[in-house]
Image 1: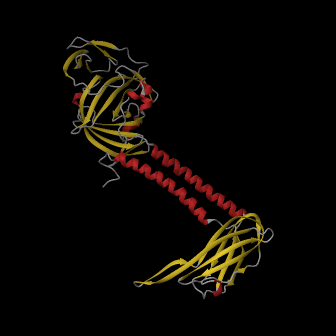
Image 2: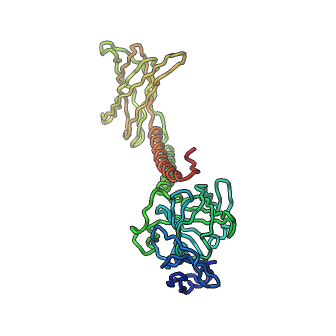
Image 3: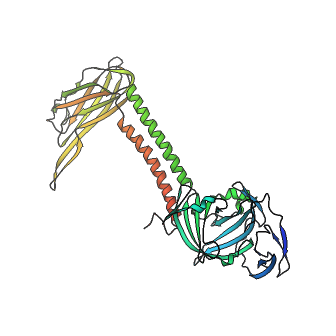
Length: 436
């Protein structure tokens, strides 16, 4: 076992390779039971502290980015790199690399790299609660975090170098991966139960830039990242959470502002009347005689007015040009608004289109006395009435609805972006929730 619970790293010791007589440095001499000669690549076993050659070891295809014997600090722990291992998923070409890390207080940890994605794994020596993981069929729960099943495979050793406290060439391990980004949980099941049976390890995603700084190398020397890592945290998910949070704040603020102004300037009808309209053929085919309404008061310093027109048209249209006139200054505001309403029966079903009422908004109307000049036209010469209502400081439901829609659409777009990232992440899994 790794030598642990010390006050400092053990003093390295040198042993002589039984095959080539080269010197081998052991960084945990009391805890190492096997090692690989860096000169002739012989796999060596220690029997009664005497090195004995076992067999030749395969060299990793990839050069490690941090040398064996290097001292690094990760998550507040000081480690020495004591081994470099290359593995693959059996029956595939998916290779990954592991760095065995030794801490004199806790023992071994593991730094794993696959396609440029890094994870620092701790076992129960660092996280004692790993002995009490709650296991489900498609997930595990650890420290109130649920990890969803992502992958399962048989692990195969392909190459290694360094020193070890067990004969890793005898391992036959089936691995279950569950994820809860930025964390990943490994459940390792030894198929023959010869050494330890079943163990859990929790990994946390490590950013290459931070690792490069810990290694004392430039980030360009790190392996290039490919795709999205199984437990890689993404900006898309964080952006969606940020947008959702502040959209909710904005929505609450919008409702609060609307309520404030509704209480401060309550809506009220300042004019309402139904007028007869008289068709005048001499004025044109569809025109009616203009008329002027009685005066009314706008009481607030600056108001918006809702002008609503209603006429009981049927399978026809009506258009009104309305001129708001300030009786003190003769300032005018002109708007044109049409209404149309059609209905009928087709294939035994009744249908309707349009409506008999329409509204138009006038904003920033100053205090004063006003009247309306009204000019109407219709496709129905028998049309005989037009109702007009003027409301001061009504709630701008249309504007409010547009703001609410915008505040809903933006989080929805952010969610779709995050979901697309998650689909790409889970495309590497046989247990994707996004595919049948």
